[in-house]
Structures are given as C-alpha cells and as structure tokens.
Image (cartoon, rainbow, N blue to C red; front, side, top):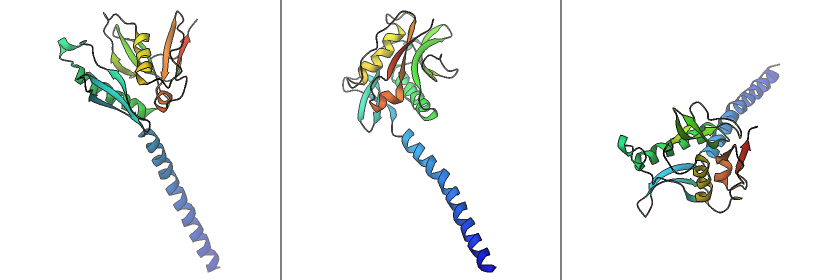
Length: 186
C-alpha cells in the first residue's frame, strides 16, 4: 500500500510541476513574440527625427517627423517622435493584431488604433494628432507608412470614395503582403 501512495505522490508532484511550468513557458513564448518587434525614436543622418520599426528583418524608417505642427505648444518633432514610438510599442505589446487607421478626437484628425478592419478608433487608441490645416488627407498619411516601410508590400490599395484605409501593423512589420486594406461602409 505504501508503494502505491509513494507512486501517487510522485505522479501528483510531476503533474503539478508540469502544470506549474507550462503557463510560464507559454508566457515566455508570447513575450518573445511580442518583443520581437519594437519602435524606436532616432535622429536620421539628415537630422530628421524618425520613428523606426525594428525587428528580425532590420530597422526601417516608419514615421519621419518633418512637420512643425505643435511647435507653438513646445511640442517638438523629437518629443512627438519619442511619445509616438512609445505609444506604438504599448499597442504592439497590448494586442495582436492591431490596425492603424484614422479618425477624429476633439475635432482634430488623428492616426489611431482600431481592433479590426472596419472598426473605429479605440477609446485610448490615439497614436498621434494631425495638423487640422494640413494639406494631406489622413489616408495619405497612412499610405506613407506603407511606402516608407519598404517595397516588400503589395503597394497601396485602390482607394474608393467613402472608404478608410487600415494597416495591420503586425503583418506589415513581418513583411507579409497585403498588410493594408480599404474598408468601405455603406
């Protein structure tokens, strides 16, 4: 009888140990995947503050901060670069996938995060604010993110009136084709 109790105790210990290790191993694997990519703010050789996307495929310019929008409020291109890079990293860590699109917040046009293609901006999804007097439309700004990130994408989707562009950021960082799509609402 004591042998069976010893075997049961050993078996229970091994099973308990396995279940104790398994969640840790899964969490570590998820963390490695999430930390595989990041956004970093650096000054390019030409002196332009730039948010770079970094990962196993190297470092690529993602957003070049050339606008003086916000300068009157002492919101410099460097400050915007650092804050937006951190916001993108927070969104990257918080969810998979996430989509960049555009919307409005406090009457200002913004680049924001959406949970899925076709959905609106998340409540705390602000990435950055666009100049309301800017000459470029928000879809054009997002399209620049595709062009700037490299030529390994399928190119800019054909735009239709009343449609919004969505970029699946994780797919884009991984270099997968068709990381962007226009979604039209009727």
